[in-house]
Image (tube, rainbow, N blue to C red; front, side):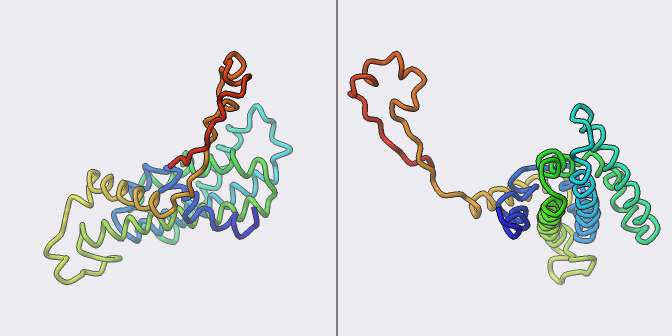
Length: 229
């Protein structure tokens, strides 16, 4: 995988929210407005980059038996720093995100990338992976928030939209509306990023009972290849 492929995979092919279905809780909770989505996406991306870089740099030092607790301690440290910065420079955003900002510590996207990628790759590759996954997370959040805010609140980034402000679909700002938009976007992503059909061998070679089957040894069964949709 090239560095460009590593960077771009998080946007569509391995989007952490719409393809891997990770980080569902903050996605549904903070996607009621675009500002909240951008704030959560930026905070999670900063933590993801910092944790990936440090964990990759220390991957040969951290004992394998205690790697998960070590990851959580490192991630918690970065989340604390990000939360303090947000409280200092964007108190309104801090109040809006509420408990979901410190809960980045247990965001499965960050812990998952630490375990599946940073723990096995170089610092540079881990940083690139973090940027791509963070951008994919932010993109999914912003897309959901745009739909929910425009049609649910009749606004965009706080600015009222004529006609829509008087014809709001309020349920889109609630949990059922969030799940509906989430499901629609997942379906659209699966349709857009659908991989090419793969061929599977249904012949004797792929059968677990081939050794005990007379057809396999006599050459009576040739097997076929079919396209798996």
